[in-house]
Amino acid sequence: MSHMLATLVLSILLTGPSLAQHGHGSGSPYAGLERRAVKALSSDEIADLRAGRGIGLALAAELNGYPGPVHVLEHAGSLALSGEQRARVQTLYEAMRAEAIPLGERLIGEETHLDRLFAERTVTADSLARATAGIGATQAALRQAHLKYHLATMDVLTPAQIERYGVLRGYAGEAGGHHPGGRAKH
Image (tube, rainbow, N blue to C red; front, side, top):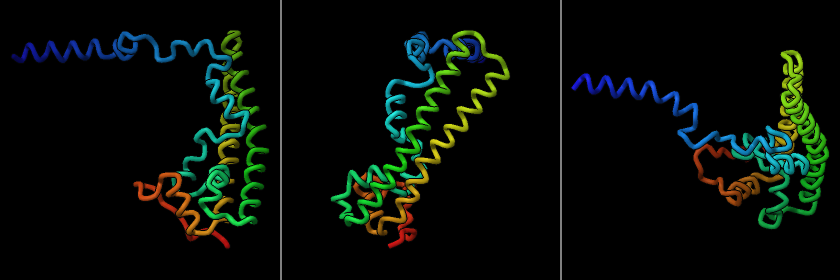
């Protein structure tokens, strides 16, 4: 019996890495992605970056009770925004887009450049370091651009509106959904 168990364990140990490496016989999970214009970005991600959408960059704010300007505007009626609040949030949204769109375009350009370095087989350790450092800096700036407008939106809404926003977005009562209602200014 112990010989059979040892054989089974040895078989698992020897075939496990092979199965993991080859995607369990179903091909690479990346199959088809080689046809993308920019390998690291889907066409949807490119469209979102060009439109200034958050693509999940502000989840730390959104899911911790810091409303985003675009979603506040989407729920303006249900949040009973005053005319002044609506105008202030609209201004924040427009400022966010004005900042995020150029950063998104820059990120697309930097990812395209990195892709080209590999495609043309001209990548070096130095060019790789410069390209990825640039991409990282742009990603950080883009994320900050989205997050800071969530933070600024808090100063426009009342605590009750912030709480209502969480309910409207489906976050109220969810684990981890902390809503810092005491931060809003009136």
